[in-house]
Length: 325
Image (cartoon, rainbow, N blue to C red; front, side, top):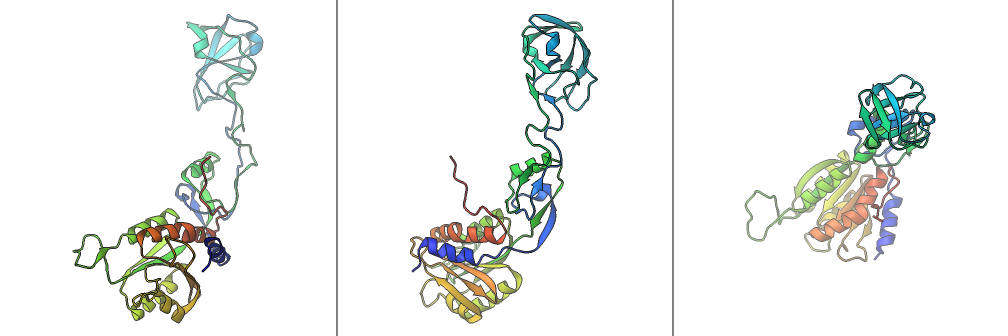
């Protein structure tokens, strides 16, 4: 039997990335894999702006404190002020553009306002409380490279540079079915000797989280002809076939025979527990991953083998989950 590392290497060696790409709205790009890098065409922020509510001043006008200046204008976020005149201050709010001529912000807690005159209680240093243009992202900077799998925070970052669309690989179509005469769907009566099909809910959720287009072929009875027919249908509709159950060595486990009849079995069982009865091969040219029917084994083998295989086929470059520091 192969080790976990050897089995995974074999699977990934067969994981050919999709060639087809499409353009999607950034709003819909979560869980999609970039087919082209993303480069910013603007500075973020696009202008020098205030980090605080307070007053924009010229440090030359406040050599020492206290100093009193006339308030010449009011600048809110989203509005542009006029150049700051000498010996004046501009009332400014967080995020508002710093007016030309000003080189520092005095936060309002360090001031006292009396009519149209403000007393500066602390002499500021040049650059104080100013967020510089391009300090987050500079124009021309690559934000993400091709192969990056988008997350909600990534979509927000892309939106901040004004990119409304992204070039991504198309969704991977994954056909999934569940073998076993014993399986019953939740909501149906549970006859003696039967169990509810919990794996269907787990696998569909995992595949959806990976951004796959799921083709659910339901429950397939323990019958060789029916199993072969399910494989043929799956191969005609999907880029990948994932099955649950039927990969052990019992007389009612027909997946192995069905795959060998319609394609080739390239991996059968690995040195791992839980998860020993894992299968991999091709059915009419379409990759196939057979997961054990035991729910724990099913979940573990999906995460260790099916997940990285799917990500690689999607064109992703980062296949392992990120470890927290």
